[in-house]
Length: 530
Image (cartoon, rainbow, N blue to C red):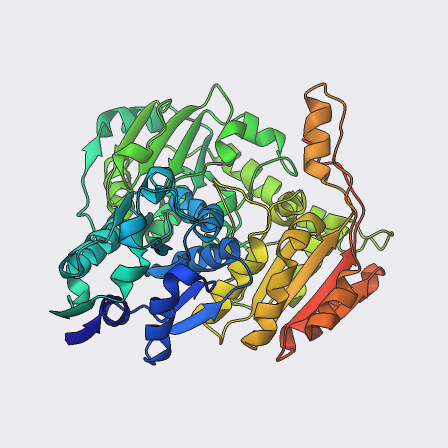
């Protein structure tokens, strides 16, 4: 498609041709020409967040949910710096995101001009590509390079555009989507014989399914049956395996670490489990199957990279006569059943304040299939990992960056990506304090999101970690507002839950509502058992 206009016009036309539906950001001087161009077109929607950090989180989680390029923007100076927190989440967790930031006019670059800093120097820490656009004739090529890097590396890319360059004239053809959406072809490498030897010699194997294994779920289940393995679902991969699967041991972590895990003699990690690996038993031989060689754990006993489904099929073919340990299978199924019983018992506990496991177990009866659950960072996320049994829902969380305050922006990005799906944000009171202004974004764009605030007035996990390290806990107390009243002042329905018996009805009503609803649940600060 031929575009005759200015650089800002071309950028928007090119992004639209690549399937970008919206750009998240905050208005600022250095991107005035981009905003002007935005107002003159109707293919891309501008989502005005209340902070640049939240805008980048929204883009990160839209990209993670859809697998497609998402875009965020910010002005120069403090706007560009604020964008980095959310962009780091995309960079470390593998979301294809393009950040476009404004910059001072070209004649001021390198001077002591207001809001000038070398953006490439800073952004190189949080992106796989960062470049400045100076010549309008290079606009298409630089955009294509950035988009390719985002797609190929499952990462963040960044382009700086000086304010005057945005407004420069350009007449050029846009590039088709298939130019940038080319994925790296699978590369098969590794020691298959060493993998087979480790599995054949094991009597108590476990499979851990992690991120990047979405396309190999059926092969993973087949392998679990083939070798008589239990299945552990990494925190960031919780949505891949149904909780009803009889060998599903759930996730492992501070809230749940059954003794049977320590008895495993072989662990097959499929994909990546950044948080869970520290709980693997030392004596177990680790086999790591990863999509890309650079993701392989350096401490793995044996490893291979490539198409995960195909790798597993090759392994099963060569393990045709594997002798399954039936006693181990029975114990795995027994442990999986015990976990379900613990969750069911927790749902009957009506003590006050509400126990976090009571809240999470209640979600099992009220969260509809195909819902998206966005988790913020905090101790409650570990109780969720134990208490919620996935049945065709999807969970979004930060695996590597772990920035508090990401949950509500993640839910907004998910809802905008698919308004037909139910979206629930589960946020601690600390995370809510840092992101509560985004309730206004929910109202502005009429986003029917259910926000569950776990209110215990303490940074609980940090308090407990300090104590575990032999330090005196300090700085963990929280001064919290009345979230219900704040929500109402924003135009959001708000309710406080203190009686556990109200939990399910309140959540069900909120999920069925056609407007945003905040539920403040007064919870006990319960120490994690591990």
